[in-house]
Every structure is written in structure tokens, then in C-alpha cells.
Image (cartoon, rainbow, N blue to C red; front, side):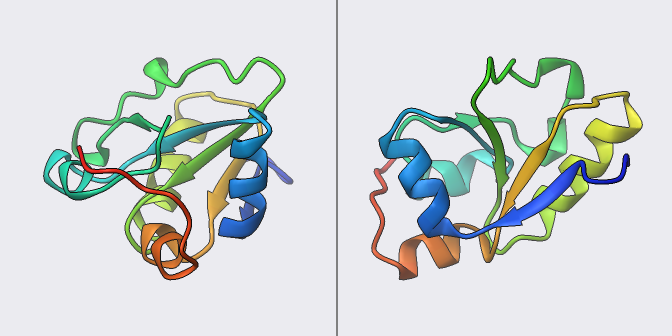
Length: 109
């Protein structure tokens, strides 16, 4: 990865960006996890089938990866960087577990 390419960000900051339409949120959990609950507006790209070529263009917004606890989004960021992605990737600290614990909005699949 490039220096200063991947950063940890709190669920509160990501929620603020989401509310202001300033984030593209990529959920790298699997379909069954997504169907239980997910962040409204997030894009599902399961790590098991993750294709860095399919990463959406954030178009000036923050690109955020998240998973259940924070581990798989790191693997997705590594795959993206290894494939040549040079943009900044934000990783949600604590993943969806922290998002839910903070009481932020989620919806069933």
C-alpha cells in the first residue's frame, strides 16, 4: 500500500459523512450478513468475491470500507492496493459491530 492510503475512521465520523452525502460506503461482509442488517446506502462487495476493478469511483467523496469487526475491510484494502488502486480508503473502526453499538441507522437486507 502507498503511505497515507488507508486510514481508520470512527463510526461517528462515517455516519456524519453519510448524513451529508459525503461517503461511498462499501460493505465487504458476506450476503448472509448483509441480509441481517446493513448501513442504508452501502454497496455490497463481499470479500469472498471482491474485485478491486469494481470499486466505485468515490467522485470526491470519502471511500469507506467496512465489515463485521474491522478485519476483512483491511484485507479488502490490501487487495485494492495490490491491484493498483491509488485512492484513499477509510476503514471503519470496529466494523458493523461498533456501528450498531453506537445506535446508528441500519436496515434489513
